[in-house]
Image (cartoon, rainbow, N blue to C red; front, side):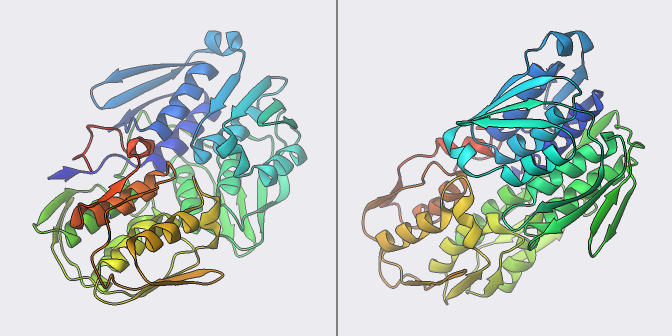
Length: 402
């Protein structure tokens, strides 16, 4: 059995709420992957004491450490950690912070969030890939934020809203993408007593009213579960997965179970146990606007299936950890797979012949590692130029090795 580790999307949001509240919590089934550890490091610099006990982590705010901190932070690879953390620092009245990001991370963009934080009262100045923030008591009020490239800007503001001086009325500018991730932020706030009113125009989050739980067990990471489920469906033996999922905390990639069944996979559900059978998968047409992380693995499943696969809503995947569209298309060319790429859609056809002995470039992107390893499983002559980037979402030793 493979036990899927805790969702980094849930853990990161919980840790950011914790920083805003300056409180204390036990996070059970902690997932020490690189993305989550970036936020743990930020919390320790901020003024939290962290203690590990088995698979759990205890976080406790220490005011003395907070006052002694120079508030200098660095984010290497997690855009979620980076963007959500900026609102924490912006909401510290009179505190000066310095946030450095890797060049790759900085290029992915934070301008819509900075504009919103300035409008709420914070001072932000960017020099090269370093951001200098002078915090303020964020004032709330009516605000619009750009959401056509990422929902993380809106999530960053929403998680800060209960700690502002007045209610935040947040509207969206442009198409809202990755909506399930925003719904997850809202669900976590509501579970702790925050008052959130949603409408077609946006949402209003009331100031105050939030109370941290003493303990929290995060659900399994369904992006990781999607990979292992596809691997089992394409493999030669039945695989059992232990997956904890509470639909009250929606994850975008929960869609994978319905998608797999539409593709012809046989899956049995038994409480927290999922049993995935080897299956002949056929292609379908999907819009991945809300589930972008599934694109790489579904694309590779498409060339390993029995009929063409069409994936729509993928253009913004150029702005992820790597240009995933480019990385996938380059791999398809090397493998000899036929494909058609348009402005916002990719259609792939099943492989018609054995792929040549080759090495695929993962672009140091964990999602491409997962995707390409599906091909490698069936065609050992195909290699990957690295697998270390997988630690971004899966701490080595927590699940069966890829």
